[in-house]
Amino acid sequence: MTSAPSGRARTLEDFVRIMSEAANGPAHNYQPYSPLPGDVFITSWAKSGTTLLQQMFHQIRTAATGGDEDYDDISRVVPWEDTAQMIDLNMQAEQRAAPRGFKSHREYERLHAGMRYVVALRDPKETYVSFYRFFNGWQLERDALSLEEFMPLWLGGGPGGCDYFTHLLSWFSRRDEPDTFLTSYNRVAKERASAIEALAAFVEVPLSDSEISLVLERTSREYMYANKDKFDDAMVARVLEERSGVPPGSDSSKVQAVGSQAEDLPQSVAEEIDTMWQERVLPTTGFPDFSALAHELCSAPR
Image (cartoon, rainbow, N blue to C red; front, side, top):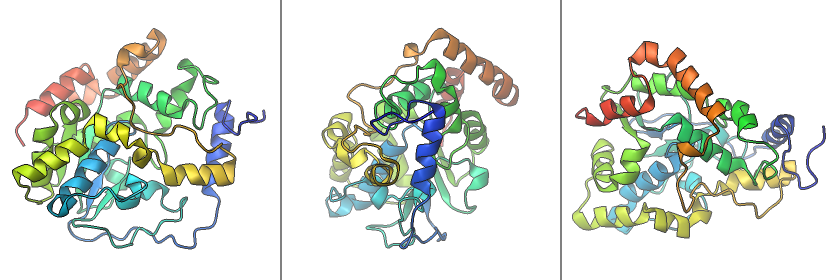
């Protein structure tokens, strides 16, 4: 099959082709990540608050100098290791503040050991809806794939990622480790003030009350939506446009005016996800669903 005239994918095969073309380009400036003591990896699963935590982390570490708004892509200042070679980014470039921070969607076992890890977990059904909304109309021709047909892309987890359940089980098993800051997406989104204080303490950046207020304002949905061009994978989008023919001007923002709801899933997809949970998560954790797991996670003291 051929791709849509617009350059967006109409099929799963199209999508794989587009990503393969994007990955095969020159990388003259790319240098791989080399760990330093104190590095922080923000490594939530796809559509689970990674962008919000990148912004929160970056504003925390720059709050003492008034915060930083002077960037075109949050992943330029908190680099995304999984896409760095594709977008020809030097992972060793000096960062604007300490500690150094990086983004990933990987499970613990495929990250460098001895770092500090920040992870938010999210209901799998919410991630599915959010993932679909993110791709639909950007890399995918709008409505070319139904929600039911999107399952293989959801299972893929995005560049460098893994499937949802591998990621969740990996990080949930590390919930009591001192090098891991594990929370839920809904807790971060709904209790941002306490999340900011807890994250600042974890990365050892002291904040005054006024600095907490600054971070709180710049991590609100209103602020991030008003500045959504900073959170739209601009560097990845540019490569897709240049190498794969994805049209410019698509809305690739990760910040939506309204959040994604699990209730938007077709029953057949919800049941398939429930079955996977029962087969993979319940036997290991004892929790029958995400709500029970998140309640236990968020009620435990850090």
